[in-house]
Length: 338
Image (tube, rainbow, N blue to C red; front, side, top):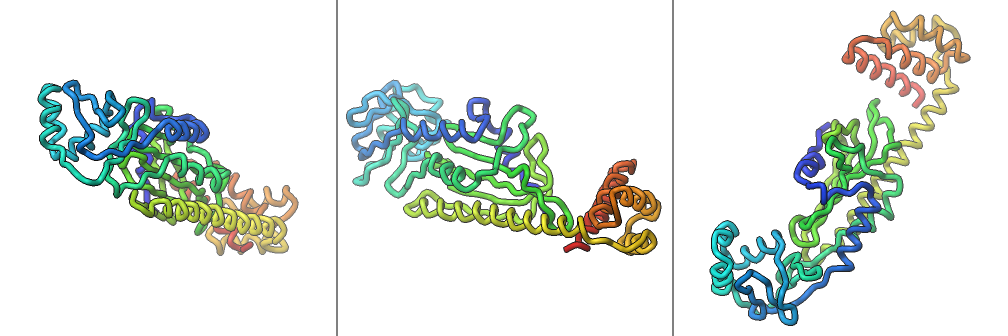
């Protein structure tokens, strides 16, 4: 088992304007960004940086750079962003004029209104955040954000550079190797080249208010760069989510069958016989007699009645470590009905 800290890191690097309360509001925001954004194609020779650092492209004479597109422009020019920031606007525009390379291939310039969101060469293939969330909505019907974090965040984020979405199935609990786990996943993407397209699926035991995922098992990762075949990544992500859902349903159905069988199958014909089974299974002797009495009140010595009785008795154990050990022993009794 491992602890996953990806959502924890996202939690503490995001501002309030990047947080969304529900999956639907995040999805609607991303659809809006796609609808309001436009790709311009222009050769580097057709771009001009004015003395006030406005970005001029063809018929668009007064575009503004945000922090991300300005960083991309500096990388294209091969000039440190920190160096440019120390220059006057007039000197900085001259520096760009002398350092931006020329090319016969056009650049992709993603705009939203008068704002430049990103700058890319022809090798970059954009995949919209809304396209990824369409797949999530179609395949993960029962999944919701985790508990609200300490700062009010829900695990759903979208900023000028990227998008991140954290979802779990809050009622998908099932048993794996005698312990309770529920399914969840992270998906992420960037429309502007900040990060790859990707997903991480897992089964977890607990999520704290810092959005650390505790004791995760069956962790599966997939990512795809924004090259020509990036949209194939959506098919892979769909399959990963469908596999997680199918495994959840399979395990939940299997657990339901075990519980149904445990409700009818008896551990023995009388108290003495049942007590011998419980001793053999490692149940503390001081709990056996009161458990048998509680089970008898429920109508008999079925596996379920014994497990239920012992579970209630375990709540009276003072120390958490002893209580967890006792709960694990009791959970193991259900395997007798498998």
